[in-house]
Length: 82
Image 1 (spheres, rainbow, N blue to C red):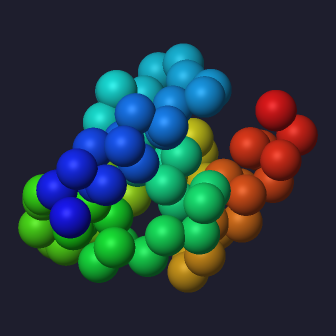
Image 2 (image 1 turned 180 degrees about the horizontal axis):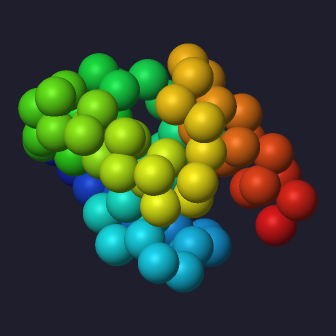
């Protein structure tokens, strides 16, 4: 199980978004792959609250509205175009 989590992390970060930390880019990539906060937390061995904090910070840095799914929609659209 642990090995598969590492493989998923090695596949991530195809495109780094300037101004975001490495962890924020990893989380953004996983969001684009339609992973939920709980799944991301499990993959990265972090708490779900930590992931929610990262999501909030990413939205602020990308100047996205603070509405539900704005980050998910942005990530999916941006990574499809990349």
